[in-house]
Length: 326
Ligand code: TXA
Ligand code: MG
Image 1: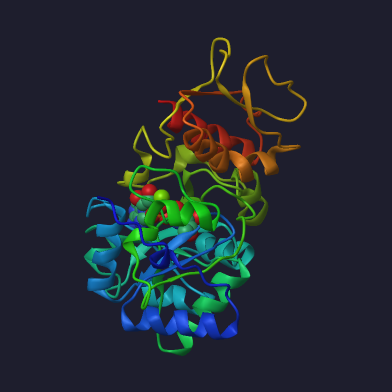
Image 2: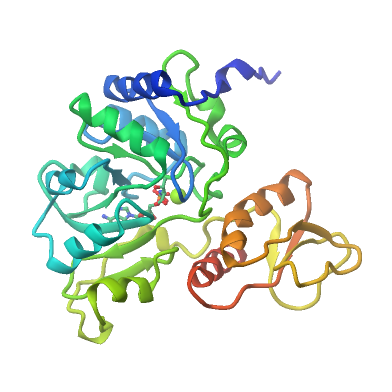
């Protein structure tokens, strides 16, 4: 018999008290699922090996997959990293807080259990208000950073609302000690841009809202052919990732019974189930993972997608659709 305990999945509306309690829970070694502007993360004290290990176990994530350390103030960047190139500091100052993750050389504080044994560490300062308040309170307690992968099982779709967080990891959290903070639907809906700063030129490892144009706006033209960077081991580049159970189809013709996702100006093909009607590419990003989940909840076999153009965040959307369909 499957015992289903709704209580275990208790969700907290994050008022000031709840946020300070959550920060304290993190400091004590418990886990907190929290919203960011991109997707929900499952957080643990980045200095606490046992907590981070529990996080990996819950996610069923291989140990060599490094996690992003989230900070609530630029000053903590120097705690986790060394030898920050000028372009990286310029980017951090321009875009943070925001949906950008920087990969830099690690300091001796970034242990193997965070970095998967690599000599680099990923750091991000999110802009979502709840995540900022949580991180600020955590820093007040002496915490230096929160390790937080997306709050889903390994290989699954990142959650963009609390219902999805509960679906993914709700049953793995403890009612009395862990927290799930409800911040509604995530504004951006796909993960942060990851930029490696280990060479002389920044290199985008994972596309996101912050695209090459925005990066170059802040730091000037970049030239990958001049990049002397050694190839970064980037486990996130697995071919199949972010995938729903339904097959994601982007070629051929839609079939009866398919889920259908496209910008609003595309009519729903006869017999298809419309999953969302985004009015522009920003809304497209916001509803992408929710649509994948809806399709799975409806038990659909296939999702037929008309991809947006390769512009701005459209590049990141295409990247996620590509991964989901391979
Ligand atoms: O938007 C986001 O970035 C969300 C929210 C919660 O902040 N987080 C997120 O974390 O997407 P996660 O763990 O699901 O994806 C982080 C990716 C992984 O693919 C990991 O392999 C890569 O970042 N990564 C982390 N540290 C790295 C490092 N030192 N070198 C190369 N890749 C790294
Ligand atoms: Mg993830």
